[in-house]
Image (cartoon, rainbow, N blue to C red; front, side, top):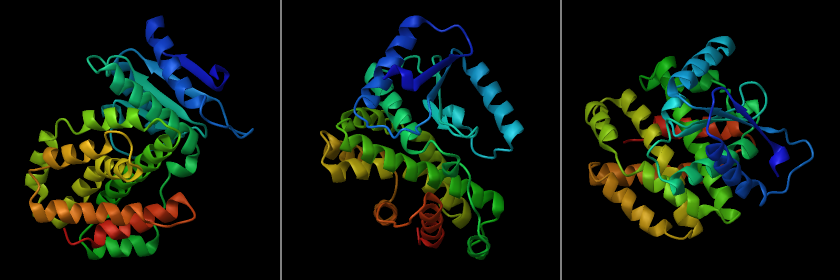
Length: 278
């Protein structure tokens, strides 16, 4: 399966690290049937965060990309150049357990296979969407942030569901458990924006990045998924009971969204978020 992977190192990286990354990537590829048109997956390997961040800024400037700071994630994916790329930084993964890194690699490979086209990284802001956003006090910069976070949550949900279907849900349990192990920064953010309708929406969209995959795994009955759901409750215990209930309701409504295209699902998700009463 390695012929489907092209590893590009922008810095000198230990061969043992590359071998392990390739092995975990192939765990996904060997369970997948490929259409003939599937492009090669580009794994961009970085040794230091400085080099990765400099490259990311340069790419965004060159292509006019306006999104959040993806380099804060354990690993990232994009299709800005028209083909799927995965970015993995060895320094960023220092101190992270192998089970979590395995989950990260599975997750990003799944994104490349399921979201490897430019349509998943460019967002349409229809006139109606902008008008509804403005009526709720959300200007274009805030709307862009809401849509970006929702796009991440929706794609992550789809990836986790797909991995569970091919028998790799266990690795996503490990990854999600890592992501919900520390929510102090989110708690502090929520305390600041709790009473601000527009800023609150951005925080809620960010919370959904973890909640939607957790709820998706719970629905698939993946091993340990029910325990993970209880851990989410404990991790977000700083949300008031009514806030947590409403957030879960929003999450379930998003999970049931219909739409022929990603853009349709994303716009409908944004309408639901803007109109929520949290």
